[in-house]
Image (cartoon, rainbow, N blue to C red; front, top):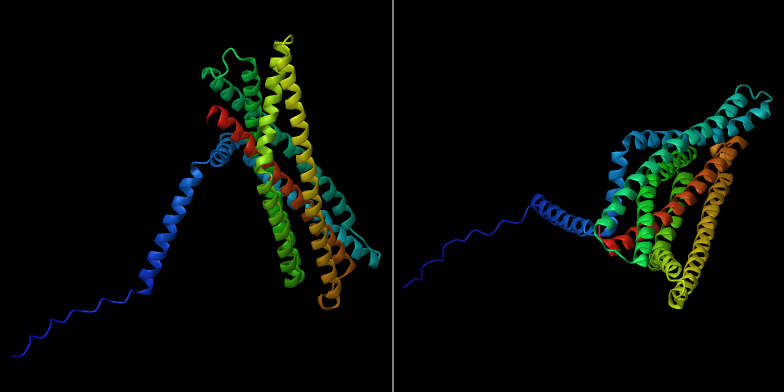
Length: 348
């Protein structure tokens, strides 16, 4: 007796490349959403979000200041270019109108800079006034410091530091972050116009101080937390020592806190100076690498003395901008710690 044949079961189709791509994109989107959700729960997220909200609330100042900052940084590069043209014109004995353009460009940058300082600082003081009133009122209503002079003194300093941190973050976003992008893009484009090798080598060299800055700030996180804690403790212990001047314990506590403050502040100073020297050394090295490459390629590229003057001027300005941006980044990371200390003590 013959056995019945098994029914034909269709083979499962092979997954198509497009469905695999959709599946991969879905997984990535899910991971990104989970990461974003975790970030939104951190005090750093609330700190940056609060600073950006301040910028939007005071957009009548922040937008003009940002626009002025971009124009100002472009104007800062113009004298370096005109100086190169002036050097080349000296060989012909006819500087012509370049001298007057160089003079005008040298006046234009300070004019834009000082105007921007007035606008951005008007924004900063308005932000600081609003937030200090708001947070002082909030802590006062919570009755966390009722009938305790030391707690009240600690709270005052925490509020001052946290408010100053958020207002400075908004200020630096407008005044100090845009310049580095403008100068790096402009100078790299100019070097790429001379030679792709010059531009790419210079861009690659800038990644070294960036990595050094990130590593430095990760290592300084705990020390910065202690800095803002001890600063608030100094004020609180001083207030209590004055209020209870006949009691030796508050005076002893004040002396202990002041010694700790000296130790922490000196450690921060010493480590920051070492980090700044390292970054500056790398930036000077990257500047001279570009110059040495340009010297080796000068005949092939047809570089003139004016071109070398321009290259020195451009790379020097970028080096100064990178150092300034690194210093601002150090400050911003430190400011987030001031806000964290405030939140830990009084909530958001």
